[in-house]
Length: 168
Image (cartoon, rainbow, N blue to C red; front, side, top):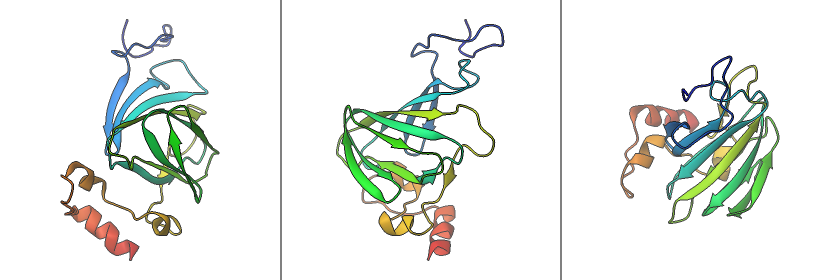
C-alpha cells in the first residue's frame, strides 16, 4: 500500500516507514496523521525530536488548538507569557490563537508529540511572532540558520540580519 492515503483506501495504521519525514530548523518531524496521509479530519499528529539548544520560537495557530506531550527529555514550554519546564509524561494544552513556543534548553535531545485539531482549517497553519512584543522581550529571538552552526558561531544570514534590524 502507498504511504499516502487515497480516496478509497486511507491508511488506518501508520508504520515508521510510512510516516512523512520533514526536517525543520528546530527538529526532525515524523508526521503520523494528517490530511493526505490518513483520512483524519479532526486530528493531526506529529512526533518531533529537537536537539539541544534548538527551539520553535513564539508562534500561534489561528484556527487550531494543540497539545504538546513530552516523550523524552525536558522542554522549556511557553503558553502565552507563562513558562514551564515539562518532563517526560507531562503535557501542555494550547488554545487556538494563543502564542506559544517550545525550546530544548538541556544538553540532551528532547522528543515530543504535537496533536493539533482540527486537521484542516481555513488560513495559515501557523503565524510566527517571535520578533513582536512582548514575545521578543520574554525570550531573545534567534536566527534559525544559526542552529545549524557549531556552538559559539553566531553569524546571521542576510535574511536574519534584516529581520534583526527591523526588530530594533
